[in-house]
Amino acid sequence: MGAEIEGSSTAAQSAQDIDTNQTEVAIGDETEPGLFSRVIAAFRAPDSDDEISDRNGNGRAMLGLGNLRAKRVEDVVIPRAEIVSVPKSIGLDDLVGVFRDSGLTRVPVFEDTLDSPIGMIHLKDLALRHGFNGKSPDFDLEAMVRPVLFVPPSMPIGVLLAKMQTERKHMALVIDEYGGVDGLVTIEDLIEQVLGEIEDEHDIDEADLWKMEKPGIYLAQARAPLEEFEAEIGQRLSDDEMDEEIDTLGGLVFMLSGRVPARGEVVEHPSGAEFEILDADPRRIKRIRVLMPAGQAS
Image (cartoon, rainbow, N blue to C red; front, side, top):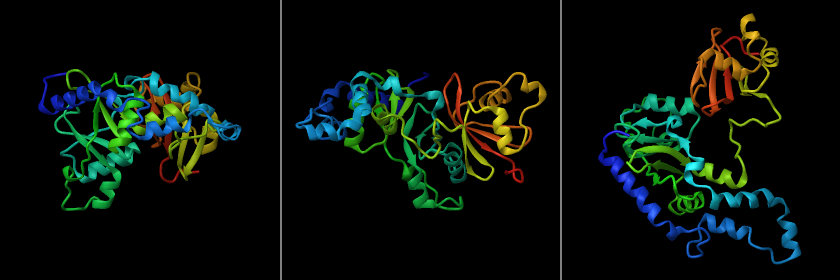
């Protein structure tokens, strides 16, 4: 992944050290009462009928516990191409824009390229130190950078979950054998492997095709029927030629961009409406935020 640099070499060595010493935080290790050990304890064999009754609602989590042993980091990693990151030279205004546009609360910070990471910046640290007016004269990104874990793709996710809890870090960068960054994993990604997907402010109930976030702004499933969504907003988004080719909101966005846009990307409509991609994979769009032009909010 290009010439090796000092930062990437350090990251690779750190990842290798973790891989070599996985047994020190091994699954079920009673000497380290971390998050994983407590999760296992919560689902130990019940001692009485009352305990069995109390645990009836935990079936899905019980099944999910198997993922902690069976799955590895490479199975749940956010690919490199989808990582939202910033250079350490970024200005305050631009950094605020990254947080606003991505909807994330933590982003990696790098020296020259993503292969030379120096840590991450947390939205909370930025807000407490500088606010969001973008006018602070003493902006110092490096002073707010927090460390991240560097892990190999082969690490079992149960081991990583325990390590994240022990070291109180919520983000890990996945490093390949050459010291390059392959992807990113958050503690939320790991917990979802046990408990199922964790809802956030950008999630929509699967039974709902869209919901109004505020006047003129909608959170929508990409599979939402385009004709029904147009009726909801009181505006036509497709022309007669498009009507013959697309049926869904995601199909419209695909037609406008000519490809599957990445998460965080914004696709503009000729009317002035904007489609912000909240969730997508390389094959399809999943969730979209629709921002109607000012004065056209229904």
